[in-house]
Length: 319
Image 1: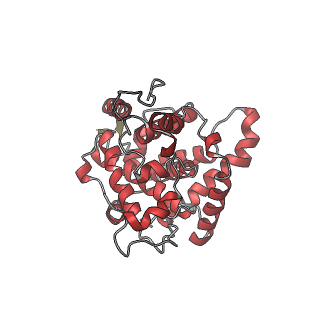
Image 2: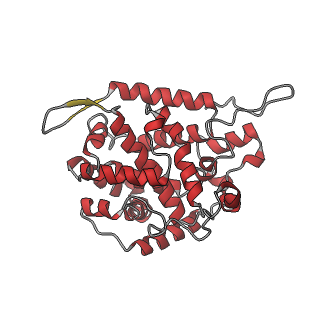
Image 3: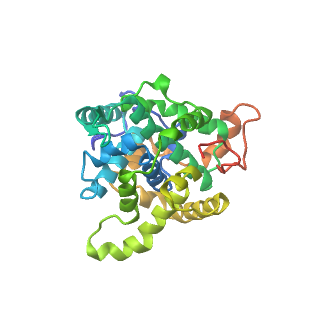
Protein backbone atom coordinates (compact mmCIF):
# COMPACT_ATOMS: atom_id res chain seq x y z
CA UNK A 1 0.00 0.00 0.00
CA UNK A 2 1.42 3.35 -0.95
CA UNK A 3 0.66 6.85 0.19
CA UNK A 4 -1.34 7.72 -2.95
CA UNK A 5 -4.45 5.78 -1.95
CA UNK A 6 -7.50 7.96 -1.41
CA UNK A 7 -11.24 7.98 -1.78
CA UNK A 8 -12.49 8.20 -5.37
CA UNK A 9 -13.57 11.56 -6.65
CA UNK A 10 -16.61 12.42 -8.71
CA UNK A 11 -16.96 10.22 -11.77
CA UNK A 12 -14.59 7.56 -10.46
CA UNK A 13 -15.55 4.03 -9.57
CA UNK A 14 -15.91 2.78 -6.00
CA UNK A 15 -12.75 2.48 -3.95
CA UNK A 16 -11.14 -0.94 -3.75
CA UNK A 17 -12.03 -2.62 -0.42
CA UNK A 18 -9.07 -5.01 -0.68
CA UNK A 19 -9.02 -8.75 -0.15
CA UNK A 20 -11.46 -8.80 2.77
CA UNK A 21 -13.34 -5.53 2.98
CA UNK A 22 -15.27 -3.85 5.80
CA UNK A 23 -17.92 -6.58 5.85
CA UNK A 24 -15.42 -9.27 6.84
CA UNK A 25 -14.58 -10.63 10.26
CA UNK A 26 -10.90 -10.01 9.46
CA UNK A 27 -11.51 -6.29 8.94
CA UNK A 28 -13.10 -5.95 12.36
CA UNK A 29 -10.65 -8.12 14.32
CA UNK A 30 -7.28 -7.07 12.94
CA UNK A 31 -7.50 -3.57 14.35
CA UNK A 32 -7.68 -4.87 17.92
CA UNK A 33 -4.54 -4.28 20.05
CA UNK A 34 -4.59 -7.86 21.35
CA UNK A 35 -3.42 -8.95 17.91
CA UNK A 36 0.12 -8.11 19.05
CA UNK A 37 -0.08 -10.65 21.87
CA UNK A 38 -1.66 -13.12 19.45
CA UNK A 39 1.27 -12.62 17.09
CA UNK A 40 3.78 -13.46 19.82
CA UNK A 41 1.76 -16.56 20.72
CA UNK A 42 1.95 -17.58 17.06
CA UNK A 43 5.75 -17.23 17.10
CA UNK A 44 5.97 -19.49 20.15
CA UNK A 45 3.76 -22.08 18.48
CA UNK A 46 5.50 -21.91 15.10
CA UNK A 47 8.90 -22.50 16.72
CA UNK A 48 7.82 -25.96 17.88
CA UNK A 49 7.88 -27.31 14.32
CA UNK A 50 11.57 -28.19 13.82
CA UNK A 51 11.59 -27.96 10.03
CA UNK A 52 9.74 -24.66 10.02
CA UNK A 53 11.82 -22.95 12.71
CA UNK A 54 15.07 -23.90 10.96
CA UNK A 55 13.91 -21.84 8.01
CA UNK A 56 14.10 -18.80 10.29
CA UNK A 57 17.19 -19.52 12.34
CA UNK A 58 19.31 -20.72 9.40
CA UNK A 59 18.39 -17.91 7.01
CA UNK A 60 18.46 -14.81 9.14
CA UNK A 61 20.13 -13.29 12.14
CA UNK A 62 16.77 -12.60 13.74
CA UNK A 63 18.46 -11.42 16.93
CA UNK A 64 20.28 -8.63 15.09
CA UNK A 65 17.17 -7.50 13.20
CA UNK A 66 14.43 -8.74 15.50
CA UNK A 67 12.38 -5.57 15.62
CA UNK A 68 12.71 -5.03 11.89
CA UNK A 69 11.44 -8.55 11.29
CA UNK A 70 8.47 -8.00 13.60
CA UNK A 71 7.65 -4.70 11.89
CA UNK A 72 7.80 -6.31 8.45
CA UNK A 73 5.48 -9.10 9.59
CA UNK A 74 3.04 -6.57 11.06
CA UNK A 75 3.24 -4.53 7.86
CA UNK A 76 2.41 -7.61 5.78
CA UNK A 77 -0.62 -8.47 7.94
CA UNK A 78 -1.78 -4.84 7.85
CA UNK A 79 -1.38 -4.61 4.09
CA UNK A 80 -3.34 -7.76 3.28
CA UNK A 81 -6.01 -6.83 5.86
CA UNK A 82 -6.59 -3.17 4.97
CA UNK A 83 -4.67 -2.38 1.80
CA UNK A 84 -5.92 -2.44 -1.76
CA UNK A 85 -6.11 -5.71 -3.66
CA UNK A 86 -3.10 -4.66 -5.72
CA UNK A 87 -1.05 -3.87 -2.61
CA UNK A 88 -1.96 -7.22 -1.04
CA UNK A 89 -1.04 -9.13 -4.19
CA UNK A 90 2.30 -7.29 -4.38
CA UNK A 91 3.02 -8.14 -0.74
CA UNK A 92 2.21 -11.79 -1.35
CA UNK A 93 4.39 -11.94 -4.46
CA UNK A 94 7.28 -10.45 -2.50
CA UNK A 95 6.94 -13.09 0.24
CA UNK A 96 6.75 -15.93 -2.30
CA UNK A 97 9.82 -14.59 -4.12
CA UNK A 98 11.87 -14.48 -0.91
CA UNK A 99 10.75 -17.92 0.23
CA UNK A 100 11.70 -19.49 -3.11
CA UNK A 101 15.32 -18.49 -2.52
CA UNK A 102 15.65 -19.86 1.01
CA UNK A 103 16.64 -23.35 2.07
CA UNK A 104 17.36 -25.07 5.36
CA UNK A 105 19.37 -28.11 6.41
CA UNK A 106 18.34 -30.91 8.74
CA UNK A 107 21.33 -31.21 11.12
CA UNK A 108 20.73 -34.93 11.66
CA UNK A 109 20.11 -36.21 8.11
CA UNK A 110 21.79 -33.45 6.14
CA UNK A 111 18.65 -33.03 4.03
CA UNK A 112 18.35 -29.69 2.25
CA UNK A 113 14.80 -28.43 1.76
CA UNK A 114 13.02 -25.28 0.72
CA UNK A 115 11.29 -23.14 3.31
CA UNK A 116 8.39 -22.82 0.88
CA UNK A 117 7.39 -26.47 1.30
CA UNK A 118 3.57 -26.48 1.47
CA UNK A 119 3.58 -28.40 4.76
CA UNK A 120 5.75 -25.73 6.40
CA UNK A 121 3.74 -22.82 5.00
CA UNK A 122 0.57 -24.51 6.22
CA UNK A 123 1.96 -24.88 9.76
CA UNK A 124 2.88 -21.19 9.92
CA UNK A 125 -0.52 -20.20 8.56
CA UNK A 126 -2.53 -22.39 10.94
CA UNK A 127 -0.50 -21.28 13.96
CA UNK A 128 -1.30 -17.66 13.10
CA UNK A 129 -5.01 -18.16 12.50
CA UNK A 130 -5.41 -20.23 15.65
CA UNK A 131 -3.49 -17.66 17.72
CA UNK A 132 -5.49 -14.71 16.43
CA UNK A 133 -8.80 -16.41 17.11
CA UNK A 134 -7.84 -17.80 20.50
CA UNK A 135 -6.43 -14.58 21.92
CA UNK A 136 -9.14 -12.19 20.76
CA UNK A 137 -11.91 -14.49 21.97
CA UNK A 138 -10.33 -15.12 25.35
CA UNK A 139 -9.66 -11.39 25.78
CA UNK A 140 -13.33 -10.46 25.65
CA UNK A 141 -14.34 -10.21 21.97
CA UNK A 142 -17.69 -12.02 21.66
CA UNK A 143 -17.06 -13.92 18.47
CA UNK A 144 -19.61 -16.62 17.69
CA UNK A 145 -18.62 -20.03 16.38
CA UNK A 146 -19.94 -19.25 12.91
CA UNK A 147 -17.96 -16.01 12.83
CA UNK A 148 -14.82 -17.87 13.92
CA UNK A 149 -15.41 -20.33 11.07
CA UNK A 150 -15.90 -17.43 8.71
CA UNK A 151 -12.59 -15.92 9.84
CA UNK A 152 -10.77 -19.19 9.15
CA UNK A 153 -12.39 -19.39 5.70
CA UNK A 154 -11.46 -15.79 4.91
CA UNK A 155 -7.83 -16.58 5.54
CA UNK A 156 -7.67 -19.05 2.76
CA UNK A 157 -6.94 -15.84 0.86
CA UNK A 158 -3.90 -15.02 2.97
CA UNK A 159 -2.78 -18.65 2.56
CA UNK A 160 -3.03 -18.27 -1.22
CA UNK A 161 -0.87 -15.15 -1.06
CA UNK A 162 2.04 -17.01 0.51
CA UNK A 163 1.82 -19.88 -2.00
CA UNK A 164 -0.64 -22.41 -0.59
CA UNK A 165 -3.51 -24.07 -2.42
CA UNK A 166 -6.57 -22.56 -0.64
CA UNK A 167 -8.53 -25.78 -1.09
CA UNK A 168 -6.03 -27.58 1.16
CA UNK A 169 -6.22 -25.04 4.00
CA UNK A 170 -8.60 -25.49 6.98
CA UNK A 171 -11.74 -23.43 6.44
CA UNK A 172 -13.42 -23.98 9.83
CA UNK A 173 -12.29 -24.17 13.44
CA UNK A 174 -13.15 -27.85 13.39
CA UNK A 175 -10.84 -28.45 10.44
CA UNK A 176 -8.19 -26.35 12.15
CA UNK A 177 -8.44 -28.48 15.30
CA UNK A 178 -8.17 -31.63 13.19
CA UNK A 179 -5.06 -30.28 11.51
CA UNK A 180 -3.36 -29.69 14.88
CA UNK A 181 -4.33 -33.15 16.09
CA UNK A 182 -2.60 -34.61 13.03
CA UNK A 183 0.49 -32.39 13.24
CA UNK A 184 1.20 -32.60 16.97
CA UNK A 185 3.43 -35.74 16.70
CA UNK A 186 5.84 -33.75 14.50
CA UNK A 187 6.39 -31.04 17.14
CA UNK A 188 9.33 -30.82 19.50
CA UNK A 189 11.25 -28.23 21.46
CA UNK A 190 14.67 -28.46 19.87
CA UNK A 191 17.64 -26.12 20.04
CA UNK A 192 16.12 -23.69 17.55
CA UNK A 193 12.84 -23.49 19.48
CA UNK A 194 14.74 -22.75 22.67
CA UNK A 195 16.65 -20.04 20.85
CA UNK A 196 13.37 -18.42 19.82
CA UNK A 197 12.01 -18.83 23.34
CA UNK A 198 15.07 -17.16 24.82
CA UNK A 199 14.80 -14.30 22.34
CA UNK A 200 11.11 -13.72 23.02
CA UNK A 201 11.70 -13.62 26.75
CA UNK A 202 14.74 -11.31 26.55
CA UNK A 203 14.99 -9.59 23.15
CA UNK A 204 18.11 -7.48 22.67
CA UNK A 205 17.45 -3.78 23.22
CA UNK A 206 19.65 -0.70 23.74
CA UNK A 207 20.79 -0.30 27.34
CA UNK A 208 18.39 2.58 28.12
CA UNK A 209 15.43 0.36 27.16
CA UNK A 210 16.35 -2.60 29.36
CA UNK A 211 14.12 -1.43 32.25
CA UNK A 212 11.16 -1.12 29.86
CA UNK A 213 11.84 -4.60 28.53
CA UNK A 214 11.84 -6.02 32.04
CA UNK A 215 8.74 -4.10 33.08
CA UNK A 216 6.56 -4.36 29.96
CA UNK A 217 7.83 -6.73 27.29
CA UNK A 218 8.46 -9.69 29.58
CA UNK A 219 4.90 -9.46 30.88
CA UNK A 220 3.51 -9.35 27.33
CA UNK A 221 5.65 -12.30 26.22
CA UNK A 222 4.72 -14.25 29.35
CA UNK A 223 1.02 -13.74 28.68
CA UNK A 224 1.45 -14.86 25.07
CA UNK A 225 3.26 -17.97 26.29
CA UNK A 226 0.57 -18.70 28.86
CA UNK A 227 -2.07 -18.52 26.10
CA UNK A 228 -0.48 -21.46 24.28
CA UNK A 229 -2.23 -24.85 24.35
CA UNK A 230 -1.15 -27.12 27.23
CA UNK A 231 0.84 -29.48 25.00
CA UNK A 232 3.07 -26.53 24.03
CA UNK A 233 3.78 -25.79 27.69
CA UNK A 234 4.79 -29.43 28.12
CA UNK A 235 7.15 -29.28 25.13
CA UNK A 236 8.76 -26.05 26.30
CA UNK A 237 9.04 -27.46 29.80
CA UNK A 238 7.68 -24.37 31.55
CA UNK A 239 4.36 -24.58 33.39
CA UNK A 240 1.56 -22.09 32.96
CA UNK A 241 -1.38 -21.07 35.15
CA UNK A 242 -4.74 -22.80 34.81
CA UNK A 243 -6.63 -21.89 31.60
CA UNK A 244 -9.26 -19.97 33.57
CA UNK A 245 -6.54 -17.80 35.12
CA UNK A 246 -4.97 -17.15 31.73
CA UNK A 247 -8.34 -16.17 30.27
CA UNK A 248 -8.86 -13.68 33.10
CA UNK A 249 -5.42 -12.19 32.44
CA UNK A 250 -6.09 -11.94 28.71
CA UNK A 251 -9.42 -10.23 29.40
CA UNK A 252 -7.75 -7.77 31.76
CA UNK A 253 -5.02 -7.04 29.20
CA UNK A 254 -7.63 -6.50 26.49
CA UNK A 255 -9.60 -4.09 28.66
CA UNK A 256 -6.44 -2.14 29.47
CA UNK A 257 -5.12 -1.92 25.89
CA UNK A 258 -8.51 -0.99 24.48
CA UNK A 259 -8.62 2.05 26.74
CA UNK A 260 -5.97 3.59 24.52
CA UNK A 261 -8.03 5.47 21.90
CA UNK A 262 -8.03 3.67 18.58
CA UNK A 263 -7.11 6.85 16.74
CA UNK A 264 -3.96 7.05 18.86
CA UNK A 265 -3.04 3.40 18.31
CA UNK A 266 -3.66 3.61 14.59
CA UNK A 267 -1.30 6.56 14.23
CA UNK A 268 1.63 4.18 14.50
CA UNK A 269 3.34 3.74 11.11
CA UNK A 270 2.41 2.68 8.52
CA UNK A 271 -1.18 3.66 9.44
CA UNK A 272 -2.92 0.92 7.46
CA UNK A 273 -6.31 1.39 9.10
CA UNK A 274 -6.36 5.18 8.79
CA UNK A 275 -5.44 4.89 5.12
CA UNK A 276 -8.19 2.34 4.57
CA UNK A 277 -10.75 4.64 6.21
CA UNK A 278 -9.54 7.55 4.09
CA UNK A 279 -9.96 5.38 1.00
CA UNK A 280 -13.36 3.90 1.85
CA UNK A 281 -14.96 6.36 4.25
CA UNK A 282 -15.16 6.85 8.04
CA UNK A 283 -18.09 4.44 8.38
CA UNK A 284 -15.69 1.56 7.61
CA UNK A 285 -13.91 2.06 10.95
CA UNK A 286 -13.02 -1.39 12.38
CA UNK A 287 -14.79 -2.28 15.62
CA UNK A 288 -14.73 -5.93 16.77
CA UNK A 289 -17.59 -5.34 19.18
CA UNK A 290 -19.95 -4.85 16.23
CA UNK A 291 -19.52 -8.55 15.45
CA UNK A 292 -21.57 -9.53 18.50
CA UNK A 293 -24.51 -7.44 17.35
CA UNK A 294 -24.31 -9.04 13.91
CA UNK A 295 -24.11 -12.60 15.19
CA UNK A 296 -27.80 -13.36 14.87
CA UNK A 297 -27.71 -12.26 11.24
CA UNK A 298 -24.42 -13.86 10.20
CA UNK A 299 -24.78 -17.14 12.04
CA UNK A 300 -26.91 -20.12 11.30
CA UNK A 301 -29.91 -20.58 13.62
CA UNK A 302 -28.82 -21.82 17.01
CA UNK A 303 -25.12 -21.06 16.40
CA UNK A 304 -24.90 -17.80 18.33
CA UNK A 305 -23.37 -18.05 21.80
CA UNK A 306 -23.22 -14.59 23.35
CA UNK A 307 -21.29 -15.86 26.36
CA UNK A 308 -18.58 -17.64 24.36
CA UNK A 309 -15.35 -15.78 24.97
CA UNK A 310 -13.11 -18.45 23.50
CA UNK A 311 -12.59 -20.61 26.56
CA UNK A 312 -11.14 -23.92 25.45
CA UNK A 313 -13.94 -25.76 27.21
CA UNK A 314 -16.51 -24.05 24.99
CA UNK A 315 -14.78 -24.22 21.63
CA UNK A 316 -12.73 -27.18 20.47
CA UNK A 317 -9.26 -25.93 19.61
CA UNK A 318 -5.88 -27.66 19.57
CA UNK A 319 -4.87 -28.31 23.15
